[in-house]
Image 1: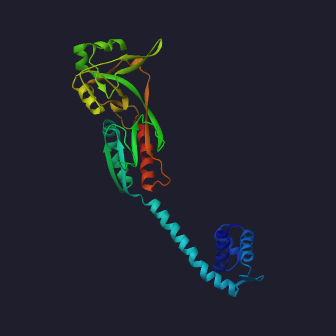
Image 2: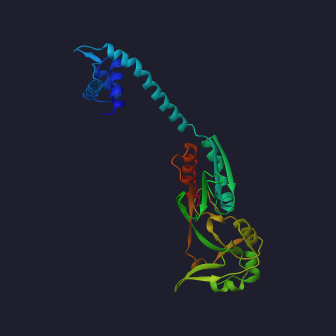
Image 3: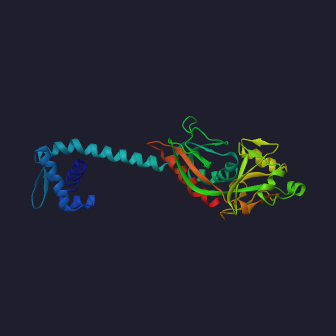
Amino acid sequence: MDRFHELSAFVAVVEAGGFSAAARRLGDSQSAISKSVNALEKRLGVQLLQRSTRSVRLTEHGRQYYERTQPLLEEMAQADGEIMRTTLEISGPVRVAAAATFGRLHVLPLLPALLARYPGVRLDLQLADGVNDLLAEGIDLAIRVSPERHPDAVVKRITSSPLVCAGSRRYFAQHGVPATPQALAHHNCLIYKDMREWHFTGRQGRFSVPVSGNLSSNTVETILSAVQAGLGIGMFNRASLVEPEQGQGRGTLQDAEIITVLDDFIDDTRDICLVWPRRRFIPARVRAVTEFFAEALAPRL
């Protein structure tokens, strides 16, 4: 039998003045309380309580044992309470990383609600494209689009975003709208990182089209700015282009001058994920912030 249960039963009998009252105090049966105290006495090899039909009294051994053990139970209860209060009082630093464009559109608008819910949290938001070394950079939580899998990280998918091919009305007015993916060979395609082949789906299945242009960049923000300026066509996940409409999900394109093309040829999506370092212990404040973004991001996308 569990020693803690034995000790708790014994102290409850002493303080409540009997087995029935102790059972009510602990929410257990009288027989279970009696068995626990009997087991304790058997294990110690001494009688702790003198029982009669009307009363229960401490023996001398029982008095000594109670005086030593009752403070221990109080300290354990106090320790439990401190841990529970620490869990409930969400406070302290939390470092969050997100891709720049995605973070500007979908993370920044959520910060007032997050900090209003947890005013004790001190948030450090890092907005940058690219994969972070979470541990080396002290990142508690990363919000990523199609993150690379890593054995030292936990990845939780919260939703997905379709890919879209987009350009400005001004650009298409000057250069025409491509009717097929192959027509991109005659357009200025803006390259994000090393994505020099764009993938499409047609009647014959999936195929790739080589693309080229006069601008490439390692940030989505640069490609988006160039598209808005009418320089060419870019490939994006749709979440990087939309403004949510009061929680209505996909929302509309944030810039009315940007339109998507070749929609019938694109069926790829990108996972939106929460990523955090694999640890044995995750602070309550980090768990709370992670759960907040898991709940709040999906409806926007």
